[in-house]
Amino acid sequence: MYKLEKTSTSLYMQLYLQIKEDIKNNSLKGKLPSIRKMSSDYKISKNTVEAAYNQLYVEGYIYSKPQSGYFVNEEIYTKLKIQKPLKTTKEEKQKKYKYDFYQAKLSNDIFPKKLWAKLYNKVIKEEVNFFEYPNRQGDIGLREEIAKYLASSRAVNCSSEQIVIASGFSDIMFIIANLFKEYTNHFAIEYPGYKVAKKVFELMSYNIEEIAITKEGINLELLKNIKAKLLYVTPSHQYPTGVTIPISNRIKLISWAEKNNSYIIEDDYDSELSYYNRPIPSLQGINNNQRVIYIGTFSKAFSPALRVSYLVLPKCLIERYIKTFDFSYSGTCINTQKTLELFLKEGFWERHLRKVRTLNKKKHDLMKEFLLKYLKDSFKIIREGSGLTILIQAKLNIDFEKLQDKAIEKNIKIYLYTYKNTILISMGFGGFKEEEIEKAVIAFSKIWFECINL
Ligand SMILES: Cc1ncc(COP(=O)(O)O)c(C=O)c1O
Image 1 (cartoon, protein in one colour):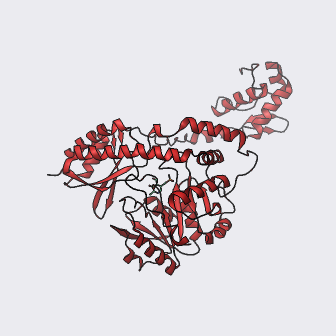
Image 2 (cartoon, helix red, strand yellow):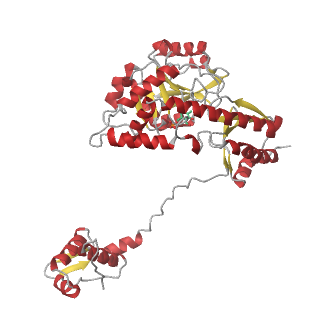
Image 3 (tube, protein in one colour):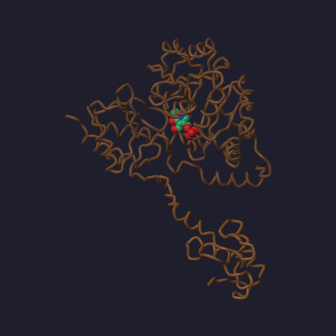
């Protein structure tokens, strides 16, 4: 018996859903009762029964035989039975560690939630045109604000037409890889370097040339022999080591690009977070050159969750960009773009940066203080003074496999990088509250000393 009630779901829909369920469970087989019988048994109109049967017929649950009526399509049950229910590939739940030393994390209290909500609401009411497609390259207003900000803070020389807003570094790398596909199949990257950049160009079938860095950034001597027409560098704070390319080498680097008809991708990912001095001005701004593709992000100083990054193309590449990407739109949601534009325009960004810098400098200094206090002279600092991490290297012989196992055991997440057979440990502090840092370092130091190979 089917249960048909007066609810917001129409009668025909109730009937259709219940019959369908019976067919799927194999509890209804053979011929269906005639429309007339159903109508009289359930005291509903023939039209209602007909509509329900019709829907089942259209979806293939039943079929009709001329002069005989409707029959259950029993194949449906067999097919449904064989099809093992798809294991829902449960996305790995973001595991909560007791202490997570991740280097690209900000603590929850830094994001200006109330202000963001206020600006967001204003933007939704007044600024967003929900009825039309947004600008492909990213909203012009936001691009103009970014151009102003980059000129004043990073000496980047650009106008809004050169800026493309994208939803993250990997998207930007895909854009660049596509822009250059016809011109080169070699991509050079500093070593050690940011694996995301390498990964994207590998996926795009480029040949990868890794160029070792020196104390002054990329090794210029090695550049002379490479085939690549595209070189990825992090000149202000080399990733992960933190070394800076001095101005003399920057000029040489640009001359190399000009001479070789090559382009440099300058990833300026964390220059907002320089604690000891102002970061050295961008490579892009030198001589108003046309050889640098500049990349920036709002992930480090604002929010990695919002997914707003941008690239600044040399003027000579704008046309190529527009032609290549005449089918696609910026992946960053227009509401976010517009809110961010207002945030910058009304001066909140500068205020926010001051706050983020002060807070993270404190955390940086605490991390350094406690590393020195608890790890004593068992390590040396490889990178400090910027970003959201301090990079260290063991001075003792540490069993790193054991260290990783022990960390898992104690619910601590650690991050190791290999460079020239040396293992570097990234002691990220951005995600911790100030008062957590000492406890986190104590917990780490305990497992650290248990893993010394004597
Ligand atoms: C070297 C480097 N470049 C760029 C980024 C920015 O990535 P996104 O803009 O996708 O958050 C990061 C973030 O961790 C990074 O470490």
